[in-house]
Amino acid sequence: MTLFAIGSLGVLLRRSPLIILLSVEIMLNGANLALIAFARRLGHEDGQVFALAVMAVAASEVVVGLGLIVAMGRRKLELDVDKFRTLRG
Amino acid sequence: MAANVLVWIVWVVAAFACLASALAVVSFRNPFFSALALIGNLASLAVLYLLLGGEFVAAAQVLVYGGAVMVMFLFVIAYLGDKTEEAPWAGGPSWQAIGTVLAAGAVLVEVIVAIGLTTGGELSREHHIARSFGSPASIGRLFLTDHLLAFEITSIVLLVAAVGGVVLGHHARAIDSLRLPGPGATDART
Image (cartoon, rainbow over all chains, first blue to last red; front, side):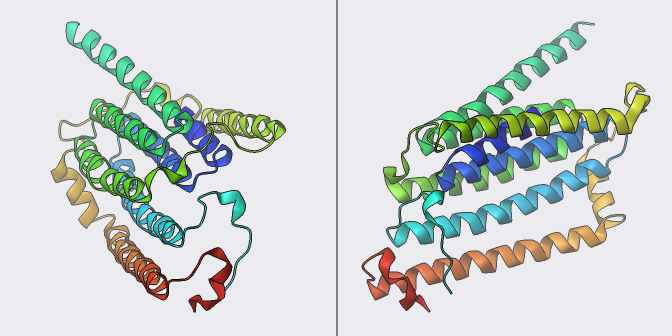
């Protein structure tokens, strides 16, 4: 839970999209740790199954997020999320 | 008795390494060092998973996160170079930083209180743990019987993510070949 709080701190406080992605990973890992701890405590294995599903979702999120960052970097944009304010189709 | 003390020591070391490396990820200036700290975080989390009886999850953690995901992160950071450097706590004005810390603390307290209220005294009772708890065989059996739908949906999510990564990379390449001068020329993308 503290891990989740630290991760959310990173998401809100940093401006580099790379660091934000790393912080999202920390948040997901905090949730995973809680799932596995409660799975152990309650004697069910379902929590571990769900943690594996969370891992798969985290991997796909990283793929899409890093693809976006690479696309930004190739267009020589400054990597600062405060500067991305407009959406254009 | 000695084994219990050993487990306790390993748990304390792994937990503190986990928290310290998470703080390091958030506060390092260079994204490369942040990624390295995240590797340490993931490794200590894998140790915690092992202590909690999740052998298969710990192995998957090391393989998926420590292997695949972190290699991709480091590759992208090396590809982008050190353009992404920034001052460590440059999140705008200071009231914004204070509000962020307060919000994170509020979320932490809220989660702890919610868990404490909903579970009550149930958590203080140790349940029986079978010897095969968390082994690959039992996890796989659960995945293919009780959670078959989640398993299949996970495969579809991974497929969609792979397609999305390819599409994003393709767009970036097309923009490269157009030799657009910079941020001002975004309209020509479509």
